[in-house]
Each structure stands twice: as C-alpha cells, then as structure tokens.
Image (cartoon, rainbow, N blue to C red; front, side, top):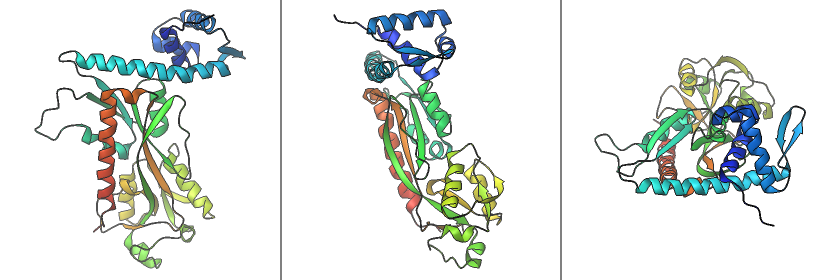
Length: 317
C-alpha cells in the first residue's frame, strides 16, 4: 500500500512543531483549533503511523512525527526554492528576504546588503527586511517562519545546538577580549598588547551585558572558570555603553572584538591567556539555501563578514 502526504498538512504539522500547541498553530494560520486538529488527524491517517500523542492536556510529537518533521523541512524548503525561482521569472517582481540579527552583526554586516549610495539595486535583487534580535529571539522568529535568515552567535563557553530542521552558514570566529582603561592596565602591570590572566581581575569592578543575553552567561562562566564571581557595577546590553563606561574608568568588561570601536586611546584591549571565542553564523530552514535570493544574501553576508573581521584585526591606534 502506498501513502500520499498532503503538502498543506505537512506545512501545518511543521507549524505545530514550531508553535508547540494547537491553539497557537490555529492563531498563526488563522484557522480554528478544531480545523487544525482535524487536519493533523487526517495527516496521521495518511502517514499510517501515530504522529502525535497526548501528554496531560498537550499534544506532543511521537518519534515518527519528529522524523516526518525532519523530512517536511526539506520538502518545504525545496518547494519554497521552486516558488522563488518562478517568482523571479515574473516581470517586475522582486522576492523578499527577511533577516533577524543581533546588534553587532546588524551594524557590521547587514548594511552591505544594500547597494552603495547613488547606485540603484540590481533588477533581480531581493527586497531586504531586517529586525534586530538577540540569538534566542532570532531563532524563535526563524522557527515561526517570521524571518528567512537568523544571524546568531555562540560562545565557546556557551554552546548552542543547531535548531531542528535548520542548516547554517558559518560567517566568522572572533576572540573575546578583556577591555579596561589604560590607566587601570598600567596600575595592574599589564603592558599594551599583553595577554591578561582573568583571575587577576577578581577584585575589579565589572561591566556586564544584560542577564537575558548569552554574553552575560559567557562572562559569568569565564570568570567562574577563573575562580571568582564578577562584581557588577553596571549592566547594559549595548557594548557601546560598556565601552563608554570603560573610558570613564568605571570598570572592566569582556567584549568580542567586532563589538569594539575602530580605535580609542582610552581603551586597553587584551587577549585572554585562556581564550574565549565567539562564532557567528547564519541559520535558515533546511533546503532554503537553494533559493537564489537567499543564496545571494548568504554570499553577501559571508563577504561582509570577511571584510569586517579583517578591518577589526588591524592594529588599533
């Protein structure tokens, strides 16, 4: 006996996996809860195996349901690529690519997706829509199909698994650096360009990213590995705020290289004797890189990342 799976129901199952509940799926798809339940039941009948089971009052995917989701992401990605190809053939129609990115990437990479001032975009260039999100929020937006690409980061001390049904394009790696005022560096006997032993700063006032960020967790873990808990005197999500506070000798901070200003004589920047690194990547649903517009955006992001990393690695004045 052969089974034919309805693509529309596969889309609905993928949406259920992203949303987590029938009610949220119904709201996202502008359907009633009973309609969602009926379509899921019909898909289960088509599949010939249980795809969902009840845990308390909630429906959850069975192993077979999760396996089908993995295949569905590939199928739906291929369909999206085909739809994009057809759309590109229609005269005057430009595709749209939606991107979520954390602040540093939004500043350093995303502007390159637009042509130089005074130049018109290429006729086949996609319309770019950007939203700023921290990595966890960007991944959530990608799961819900609110964006096509999520530019995220992971720290060597705070690994993040690749979300189910997603692929990634590595963009760049960069070191996390200890940053303090030159006067404070000299007072501690830390010469320009010398590597810093983090344990020596257990008594320092610390400037921390917000507790909801991976950057905050990275700092806590790095300091914990050095044998102390950092004593915060300021908390801010924006690294430019932290660097501004450092110029006033408010404290020290761990900051990824690309988040630092191009040059500042009021910042003393030091590698760590026990290195910590940040990796930046672009996430997208499996198969979506076959879309010419998304492939082009990924290539441009990779080129922008190479230029940004090279510029950040130049000696600071």
